[in-house]
Each structure stands twice: as structure tokens, then as C-alpha cells.
Length: 392
Ligand code: COA
Image (cartoon, rainbow, N blue to C red; front, side):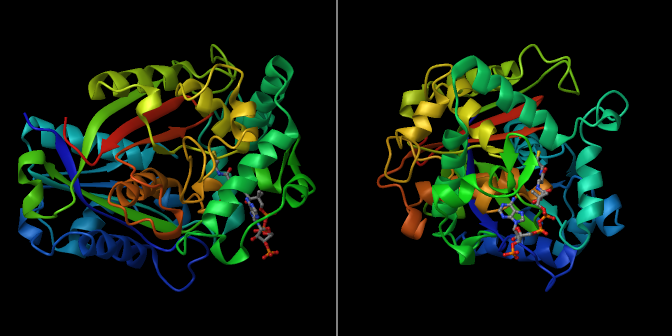
């Protein structure tokens, strides 16, 4: 069975999008993805549709959004589903679409990710509090902010990671976001370390610049069998490795370690092994920087650096645009934004653009192999994809 290839990928502008409705956002992303193909794709060729959406019932009073997608795009797919894995919905949708294509159930699959959050920040924040273990943790004050803050404190205690190193993640990602016109904070430009470190406190040790924002946005990716890919594009991007794993825990309190994410290590191992590649082969990565400490832990658990050395990795500039392994060239969740259901496929879109040499001022020279990492909950569930401009 041939490898699966991405033939189209696109994102909307992220941010406060009062100018469009939820469904218009979806349509905008799909139009962008189709624009990145050669124009040969016909709606009746799309045999699979997965829509990644975390909380449309709560946020926009609409359920059954995969069927909404088939209505919007005039599709009659024989495999269609909504995928809900909170912040990792988009990459879980890709994994489902990849499996459907690999199995021969569908030759061409459209994946759409979407969330609209900014029109009601209180409701969006409530929605985020429903993701962890509500009965045992959220109701007692462990929310996304405070849960990841616990991990940050523990990482600081164990490995000597500093607040300055965490703020450096924000500085880097805002620098990259200032080079991405679709990023939420594009027009706000770069920030200094001093600004990042002196922002108002959210949940100790996190201040405003350690957190990703609330965002409206959508993303779309079109995949097909590798042997069909050149019908739709001259620049296919191959899914060389795919991995997914979950902790046997919904909340933070039952995790084996909150500073060493076993499920991420398992997902990464699956992806590297399928791709027959190692961490040092990765030339560009989009990782899940929902809070700055997350990106630091991910450097370690994805194998980019030794355990406990993530803080030094950012401090030494290794993950900057001109470093040895640029991470979150799009601006990441921190500066590009984090519309929950759309994030995973937006990461895939960024790496696709990088591998096609289409990332403009944030292009990583000669990038041929990239990685995406998307998580949900308190880092209790992870999805990793390894993409390449060359098939195996
Ligand atoms: N980073 C940088 N700037 C931010 C920001 C962020 N995360 N969030 C908001 N801002 C900016 C706004 O652009 C605005 O700037 P302006 O005054 O120049 O227009 C200012 O801060 C105030 O915006 P506002 O929307 O009122 O902020 P807020 O205090 O209501 O919300 C947070 C800030 C951090 C609480 C909010 O962004 C948030 O909830 N983030 C976490 C989301 C999350 O948990 N996602 C899931 C992760 S698992």
C-alpha cells in the first residue's frame, strides 16, 4: 500500500473573526486548501470527510458539524465523521483520514478543523474547563492554566528551568508570528524579553505571554493515496510517520509524570519508527505550545534534546528560525493562535508550506522533513506526524 500524501492544505486568518460566521470560516479554510492544489480535484472525488471541532454546541449552538460540512461543500462522502479530541481534534482527524485512505475505504479525504471562541470569552473559558476531569479536578480549581503551571513549577524545581527560558519561547514565537500574516498577533509584531517577563500574572509562574490566546479560525487538509497524488499537485507532501497515544488518565493527578509525558514519548516513537527516521533528521517542527512550558517539555520528549535540557535548547537559540531545528515557525499556538479544533490541521498546513518552500519570510531553507505534534488535556493525549517532500 502506497504512502498517503497531502495534496492541499490551507488555513484562514486566525484571530478575532467577527467578519465571518462559523460556517464561513470552514468554507474559507477549504477554499485555501483547494487553492493549494492544481485545480483538478472535483467534489465527487472526495470520498471521506472528517470535521474536527471541539465545542460547537456550546460556542455556536450547532451540532452535527460533519454533516454541516457535507452540505457546505456539496459532498456525498461514503465515510464521514466529526472528530472531537479537544485541542488535538485536528491531528486526530488527520490520523482517522490517513487510516481510512490507507485501508482503501476512501481515495481522497477532506479534513476540516474549526473553532469560534472570541465572541464569548467567558463561555470559551468554561468550555476549556470541561476538557480535564471535571468531577475530580476542574471543580476544585485545576484548570488548563493551573494544571500546566504545576508542570512548569515541577520542571523548574527538577531541572532548573527558568522563567526567562519560558518567556524566551514566547519571544521566539511572537517573532515568527510577526512573519505570518495569518497569525493572530501578526500586526502586533515582535515582543522583547522584558515585555514577555513583565506581563500581568495569569497563574503562577505563567503570565499573559506564557499562554496561548482564545482564537477564531479554521484549517483544511486534503489527502490521497501517494500513487494518485500527482493528479492533484506537483508538490505532494508524504505522511511518512504517524503516532498517537493517550495516558490512562483524564486529569493531571494520575499521570505518571507531569514533566515527562509518557504518551508523547510513545506517540513519537511510533511515528519515528514508521518513518524510519530519528529526531536529528527533523528539520522543522510545529509543536503544541499551549503554554510556554509545554514547548520546552516537547523539545525533550520528542527527542530534540536530552531530558531536562529543554530550557537550554531555547536559551541557546536552537529552536529559533535561524537555529538548528526551527520550532513553531508559524508563530505556534502562542502567536498564531489556538482555535481548538483547527490547531492540529493548521500545524500540518504550516509544515506542508515549509516543505513546499512556500513559507515566505519564515521559510526554513531546504526543509525536506518536518514534524507536527498536537496534544490535548493536561498533555494526557498526543498525536505526532512526520511529513516529507519525498516518499520513503
Ligand atoms: N498572549 C498575548 N496577548 C494576549 C493574549 C495572549 N495569550 N490574550 C490576550 N492578549 C492581549 C489581547 O490582544 C489584548 O491586547 P490589546 O489590549 O492590545 O487589545 C489584551 O491582551 C487583553 O485581551 P483580553 O482578551 O481582554 O485578555 P484576557 O485577559 O481576557 O485573556 C487569557 C487572557 C490569557 C486569560 C486568555 O488569552 C486565555 O484564556 N488563554 C488561554 C487559552 C487556553 O487555555 N487554551 C487552551 C490551552 S490547553
